Length: 114
Image 1: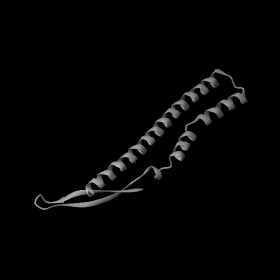
Image 2: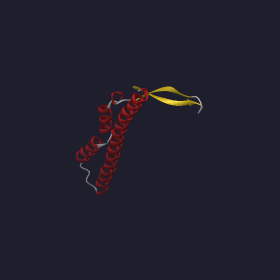
Image 3: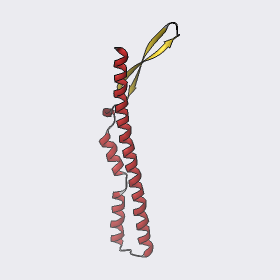
Image 4: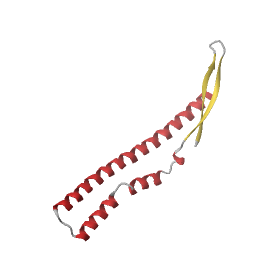
C-alpha cells in the first residue's frame, strides 16, 4: 500500500488553516496480476469445453440431441470466456487507474508541501 497525503482546508475565512490527511492507496505491487489472470483463465471454461468434447467422442454418442447439447455447451462456454476476458480487462484497467491516481496524489502532495 502506498501512503498518500493531501492538505484539506479547515478553519474559517478569516483564519484559514490546512490539515494534512493521509490515506492508503493500493499499488500495483499489492495486486498479484499474474495470479488474477491465471485464475480468470482457469475458470473461463476452455478446459471444461475440451473435456466435454473428449467425453462425447469417447461415448460415441452422435445423436442429434447429443450434438445440440454439445453445441449449446460450446456457445455457453464462449460467452463465459468473453465475460471473463471483460473482467480481466476491467481488472487491468482498475490497476492502471489506481497506479495513475497514486502518482497524481503523490504529485499533488508534493506541490502542496512546496
